Length: 142
Image (cartoon, rainbow, N blue to C red):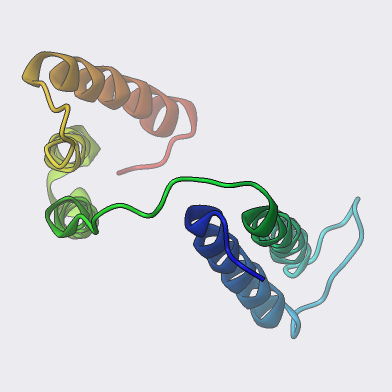
């Protein structure tokens, strides 16, 4: 058999990996019921959905033709990874209102279509939204 769509094939394998991992991690916890969910309920359901999507994607990769996988973008991957790690380290110290715009700006800089204006608007909007939801609405002190 010939793989006709490498993107679907590798995406499917990633979904299958994470779905299987969720099953393996959740197998030692109690499942519970739909009305009284145990700690294994959500990872098992989510893992099952990921497995189904992964299998469909892998099967589709043999049937539907698609474009080849492009160049691996190391700079973009590095910027997104660094922004998430920095966010995790500084959010408790400087707060959500400073850490979140920094995360958005650094990760957006990895895009080929990066523009300062729209990125600043998105950063401001998401920050205001998250401050209201997490700090005011849910009372989570970040």
